[in-house]
Length: 368
Image 1 (spheres, rainbow, N blue to C red):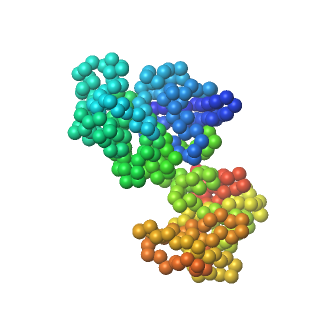
Image 2: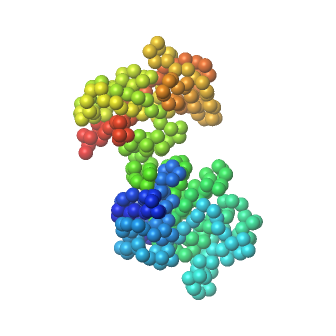
Image 3: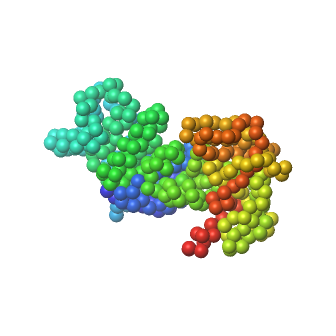
């Protein structure tokens, strides 16, 4: 196991600046997930750690060793790719042993590591099979086993579950979580799927445009996003956003008038903002209550999705507004075509300024 430290890491491809001054510390034994939209730089950052891409500028340390100029085989990392990349003519045993044989390990060591890894991944009964005789989940476990058999200090995963169907993804998420608990090794995982990030990570790194937007636990990122981007990216369905204007603000709290919900009192400290400042009010679907319509704030329900244990209610956006979503437990009284008004839960409302930065919560400020 080993820690990973990135200091002012940059990566430039031609004229494109892909990774920009990334500072990040990954602790020994942590499970860290890089998440963000396509093109944000998460896979490139993983490849820089693996040594598959060269660093343009900055320092990368694994443990106490500066590894900028070390080739991948000397970094002590194992990588599991999106494609299984298994050799079709080899058995499961030979696929898992291949890296060890390339490293010129003796036969006894090869056999011992392959068998112990197969036991961890429950592949013992499949060692004689070839990849074509395996399911998608079994192939992914073999790909993980091939990386693990080399006993790397760090395991890297590049969107390993994207080729699997929904039920297999759930199964493999649990397999990977169990594996981390059993091995206690440092794991870095790249995905665009926030569900994978929320369920697997000790720490999530949200990337946007090659820069880090926020680092924190799944709970921190969901409950206290630092920016509007993080708030909108983490959570499904996405957070509702409404234009708002500051009515009054102090260290103790503030009042805002938001389009669609009227004036609300909030615990956010807003003493550094002027009255009339343009803000954005953010409310997660589960914190938005529907009530009988009022003359001032009235929306029409245009779709109701029943998902078994819960219901999503979609509200017809008014001119210039974004789509609003309410989530509640099933069964639901709401039907398509009904008129409703919106009431946010003030204790769970978020405010963002024009730059997209979140206004600090009053309780967070007082505790600092």
